[in-house]
Length: 276
Image (cartoon, rainbow, N blue to C red; front, side, top):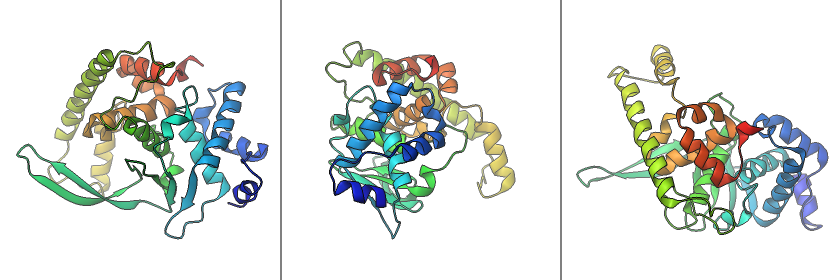
């Protein structure tokens, strides 16, 4: 991170024009923003890079291009809000690829199940960092997947101490939003989406193995019409994060299948990608 290291010695970093232009070119979902919006986004990125630490893990050397790309995607949801929504974040840690994190779940009988699984990203609560996989930061799969937006939206959701898919409403920004209306719209959409995912899962063979090409092809066919990644069905907080990814990166399917969710996200983020 030669550019950042040099500029940190002289004070608040200023992203060079060529580096910023390359970043925008690599992130086509930013193209709906006006020139003025992009200038404000750049300024937010510079502030975020100044206030928070960005480091590599497991020997990964974090370069300027990756740091700026992360900052641009992280700042997009707060472009018309405030960076204060990331006050609870210690910094950003980037692994070279997926990393292993512990998971736990309580079943209907009250039994706690614990296991470990690979992850593309993690938002650590209570002042923790956002942890990302470098490979997945740059992944473009045509599904609206965006691990940076996903994890930073989790940090927004965590700010009020409860990770439940209802982010904090800010004075001066969200007076037009109703907690009751948000709950109604997101609960209805979440219930519908989980039912759709369950119907898709019933079409998979009992011996389903995603490493078998014929099974992987069937999965793509069965789940291909969903407007969101099936991961959104795991929890209301995941539904909010995945819907936010789609809102910014590939909004058309979300707006078509769940127009009220799209409308609430447009009010919350104070942006409308489809109106550009």
